[in-house]
Amino acid sequence: MCKFKNFTLMIVVTTKYLIPKGYAAMALFPFILVHDQKMKENKVLINHERIHLRQQVELLILPFYLWYVTEYLINRLRYKDAKSAYRNISFEREAYSNEGNSNYLTNRTLWHFAKYLYRK
Image 1 (cartoon, one colour):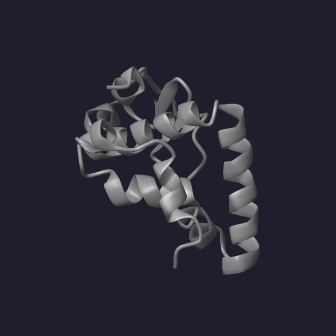
Image 2 (cartoon, rainbow, N blue to C red; image 1 turned 90 degrees about the vertical axis):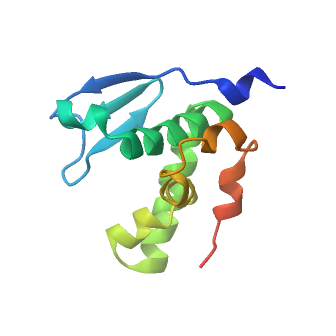
């Protein structure tokens, strides 16, 4: 079994200033930034962000952010609003679809986010 499947490095940090308005948390490898202390206990939220950490690692960090922003900009043109553009980024689709499954990262295949590209 590939050791990568069990990769779970994460450092959870509480910050009110680094997270964009309207968001509860954000993954910036190797950190998960949460808006307040109580959110550290939200298993679904933390799992969602852990999925993003895995995506970041498999794309070697910087390409993840470039892809994320590019897909967001394409989606802004496609959907005409920020919320729809954000929710339809393939990385977000994967994370939202699987955030409630605490075993998801154990069974997830490499580059699984690609399944969520341009799906309606």
